[in-house]
Every structure is written in C-alpha cells, then in structure tokens.
Amino acid sequence: MWFVFDILHQLNFFLVSAMMLFTTIFNKTLGKDAKYPPFLFMIIPLFLCLVQLTVYMYIHKVVNYMNYSEASLFANKESLDFIIYFGSFFSSIVITLFVLGTLRYIFLLFGWKDSTVKLMNILSLIYAILLFAFNVLYLKGKALTSLNDMINYSGRSILALDSLIFIPFGIYALIRLRANREEPARGKHLCTALAFLSLIPFVSFDLLAVEREILFSSSMPFRLSFVSFSVFITWSLYLLMKDKVRRVLPVYTNEDYTRALRKTGLSDREIEIVEQVAEGNPNREIAETLFISENTVKTHIKNIYKKLSISSRIQLHKVLEKIRLTQPGD
Image (tube, rainbow, N blue to C red; front, side, top):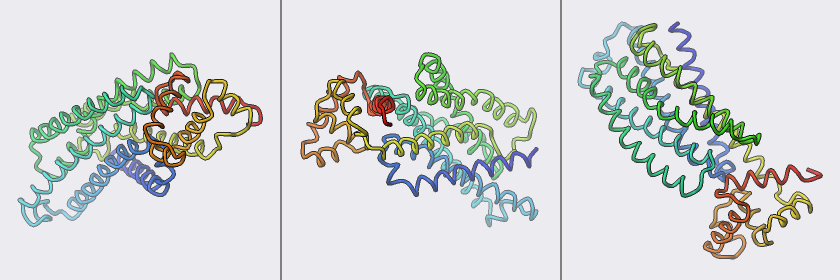
C-alpha cells in the first residue's frame, strides 16, 4: 500500500509541475484574464509545498536506505532541528497562502458583485492570518523530532485540516447547481461541488485512517486531500484556456451581433468599451486605446452593467458569449 501512495504522490507532483510550466509559458496570453493572478496565487504555493515534500521524502528515503541517523546526515542534531523547524515554518506559510489564493479564486469564479468580492477578500486575509497562527501552534504542539514527523504533520496533516474551509463552498456550488439551468454555469458549479465535497471523505481518511493510524501508518507518502485540489486546479486551468480562446475571437462577428448589442440599449461608445473588456484589457489600457480618461471608462462600464443587469466582468463575458452563440453565421 505504501508503494501505491508513493505513486499517487509522484503523479500529483508531476501534474502540478506540468501546470506550473504551462502557465509560465502562456503567462502573457492568460494574464489578460482577471482570474489569472488568483490562479497563480493558488498554484504556486501548492507547487512549492509539493517540492518541499518531495525533497524531504527523498532525503528520508536515503537516510533509511543507507542506515544513517538523520542527525549524522546533517552533521549534528542542531542542524537537523533547524531543518525541521525551518521546513515546518515554510510549510505553514505556503499552505496558508494556498488557502488564501484558492479562496480569492473562488470568489471571482462564482461571479459575485465587486463589492462582495472586496469584502470577502478582506475577510479571507483575516482568516489566513488566524490560520497561519493555528498552523504554527499546531506544529509546536506536535514536538517534531524527525524529518518523518515534519513531512507527515507540516505538509500533509496541516493541508487536510486547513482544507475544511472549502467544504461550505462545495455545498454552495451544489445549491447553485440545482438552481441554475444555464449550461456554462452548471459546469462551473458541478466541478466546484465535486472537488470540494470530495474533501469530506478524503479529509476524514487522511485525519483518521492515516494520521491516527487506524488503517495505515502515518508515514504514508500521500494524503488524498491533494486529489481534490489537483482536480480543481486542473479544471481552473481549463477554464483559463477556454477564456483565452474566447478572447481571440472577434467581438464583432457580424452585423447581427452588433445589432443585438444595440438592442440591449448600449451606445456605440459603450459597444467599443465592451469590445475592449471582452479582450481582457484593463481600464487603463482601454482609456489609452480610446483616448479617454480612466474615470470615463469606469463610468461607461457602470452604465453597461446597469443596462445589462450585471455586476462584474465575468458576468459580462457570459452575456456576450450567449449573444454571440445565438447569432446566425457563428
């Protein structure tokens, strides 16, 4: 069974590493999406956590294979203690940042109002600070004395405990899934619900069957909590690529499309703004392109939101896509 869990860890590490490489290569095109910075804020800490776990796992394997004591490998016990405490502190930081980044990505993903997102971002920052303090105190209480302890608790058990915050969002996505009949929204809520509701059995398994050694030894090299996040991050990258493809499509596909936009009550100037927003351009770039002030751009966007009965750019993209797909010749 240990061998199976080791393979799962390697596959998970390879998957996250591949996504990191992919987003690095396509950062210029993906960077126009408003969800891209939170996506990076989500995947980079998880990648660093997996790198740290992988490095320490191989060191631990070498120690066991060569029949060395960990203290002799690091010259003395003081050096080993420093590695353990540094690794624990680093894990607490990256996992806290991962939770914060994932929360902020979820807020954008659900398409909430800008004011709601700002409030939730503030609350998530406060929560992250408290979470970091909890992680540090939790590890201090464990009195880690070996690399194996540090690997098990700082990189695995902490993630399982911290991931409990995402279960309510899985429930919320399930509720929205039942209430929303639009196909794009259903796909978004379905994947979010599956990823985060799967944490219920996975976290239970990690904390009971493995950490408390009811079924397996706590030295197992993998925690199933990682599976949920790998699925969610993979699907999020798919969404970013889908949005990238949509941005390269011309907004003015035909006269029927332009006419449909005018029927919504948008003026020609507002349609120009819509085109710029659809391409993922920020307000400053829109102002420079159209030779108007940034405040004027903000005013136009507010008017566009009001006319279309929306409250965010994500919702605007959905409206535009729906209009475009209903036009003949597309």
